[in-house]
Length: 541
Ligand SMILES: *[C@@H]1O[C@H](CO)[C@@H](O)[C@H](O)[C@H]1NC(C)=O
Ligand SMILES: *[C@@H]1O[C@H](CO)[C@@H](O)[C@H](O)[C@H]1NC(C)=O
Ligand SMILES: *[C@@H]1O[C@H](CO)[C@@H](O)[C@H](O)[C@H]1NC(C)=O
Ligand SMILES: *[C@@H]1O[C@H](CO)[C@@H](O)[C@H](O)[C@H]1NC(C)=O
Ligand SMILES: *[C@@H]1O[C@H](CO)[C@@H](O)[C@H](O)[C@H]1NC(C)=O
Ligand SMILES: CC(=O)N[C@H]1CO[C@H](CO)[C@@H](O)[C@@H]1O
Ligand SMILES: [Ca+2]
Image 1: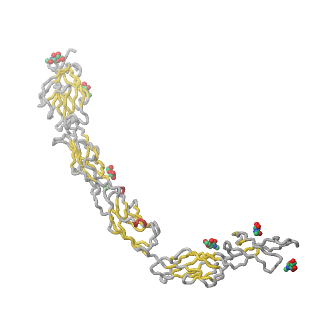
Image 2 (image 1 turned 120 degrees about the vertical axis):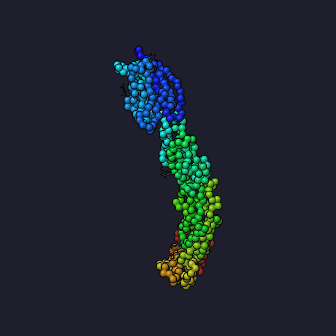
Image 3 (image 1 turned 135 degrees about the vertical axis):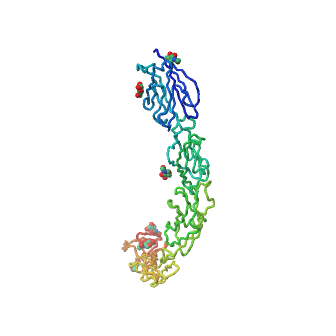
């Protein structure tokens, strides 16, 4: 190539506070980048021009100027090619001034790559190689930091110590991070700073140690993010942080009243419910864990208090049967405690957690009660008629003390009758050998003129008939003895034995003798041992 060109790239950085001013020219091959005198402030950038984004003034905006040196000046005209050439950016063919015809946004496109060309305005031939340059869009701080969410949801346990991390929020700024402060974000709490703090990283901490869920369960705080920290003209945005306090067990249960009174019938079954003790525990249900403690251990044998898992109520149940006639009222002190409470932060160290419990036992109209059960009597079989075998006794346990009527409940066994006083009387001759037991049932019925309801109790009676020796012994069999006519004296002819239906006392024995005076035979007592044959009910010698 015979033509050599000098190009001057002139860059203006108007109104930019950090711009530096210099007159330096840099030679690179055949192309020179020089300053341009039209603007007050100038800058030289290697192969590049700069234009500020978001300029609100009338279009087009001057960007810079290409220059041909003196040699080429008269024959050359200017042209550009590349990104935005001839549309966004246009060059004045004559003087090389480049103008921008759009308002640029650095956050959309931060730089444009272009090339400059010199053309012979007569021949149309390109003069020399094209020269690459860039137009850089200079950031203005036009973006506010933006939070990643509008509303954050966070939580922290109540009563946490000061400085407990709650959550971290982030705001991002689209501006050029290389320009001081444009994309830097500082955080501050604008609402809720009494209770929370935030650091430069957006981490939120508790500022006090007494955040109490039972006083206020949710805090709504506002955090502001600001760029160009320290400058008044920074941009800001805000976010809301909902901070939920997580419940801990820090409240004692307290009784809803000082005194509970229960009225309960004496015939309540064991393990039946006597009544319920109600407490208030303002913690959340999972942190209510009431246990009920008896003031004195004695009554724990009679009552038990179980905690209802859902309602936290104390359910009084009966462990032993009540009796109105012996104890009409129980009084006791019950304490409500919570073994799993976090004592270090618990609010009321002397809670109202004691209550007096009064249990009134109510009378139930009960049937007569026999003095004993069963009754056992013994009677000799030869007892005369109308004799008393024994007496039963039943009385009304209630305060009314109504009288009692007795009756026998054995239609088949009619040897006895019972008197109004409960005496059992022999009504028919007894015989042990026919009936050695009379097992009867006596009914006692309360005579209550005020009630039509039948109140009756039954008791079993065992009457044993005792033996009397009223039966003669009998020979065990009919004997037909034989003896030879010339039998010598002393010869045993026959052995005889006897049985008796009566009960024999051990050691008792039969006496054998000859019923008639007889000289020719003698009966001799063998004196053998008595043995008892239970199967036969008789005794054999
Ligand atoms: C102009 O450019 C041509 C070609 O590059 C060169 O030969 C000439 O010396 C330059 N003239 C001046 C005054 O710089
Ligand atoms: C812009 O115009 C010049 C001269 O007319 C031409 O050489 C170049 O290719 C054009 N570029 C674009 C992107 O239109
Ligand atoms: C925030 O958390 C609370 C409790 O965990 C929940 O009830 C609520 O729905 C949450 N809200 C959002 C927007 O996530
Ligand atoms: C009566 O009771 C006695 C003692 O319990 C028993 O030995 C006897 O077998 C009973 N008799 C009848 C007939 O139930
Ligand atoms: C009595 O009887 C037993 C058994 O029948 C017999 O062994 C015994 O010798 C007899 N005694 C006399 C003194 O006869
Ligand atoms: C009752 C009876 O038979 N007695 C007789 C016993 O033996 C003498 C003779 O040894 C007789 O004379 C009796 O008659
Ligand atoms: Ca709590």
